[in-house]
Image (cartoon, rainbow, N blue to C red; front, side, top):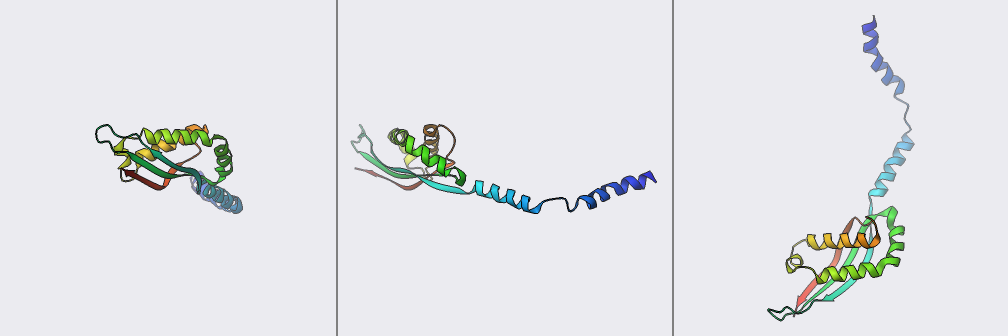
Length: 144
């Protein structure tokens, strides 16, 4: 008799708890999680840098980029405020990173190293990891 009771106990618990969830609350949690995962873009500026002439060939290189940061939608207001305060730090760090960039990083197909360096410098200037990715909307370099 006790054996059949223990066999039926899990089934009875499932039947009793079948209607004990709040579908509206579950849907709201899913929506909030989806909103936090949606990324917005924030303009980080346009930069044009002339590198010093190379000693061996005498050619000059000019780099032009338009940098955009991707971040969660709920952080856009916070980052926009921080960008107004710290734009000069980001600008200085970006120009220095472009000047110190090895030539092989500029010819890399996806510019992975350059974008990783710019992402790190941007977040350091902002004081915390707010920007999730850096996108180069425009990228060009010329030799002359």
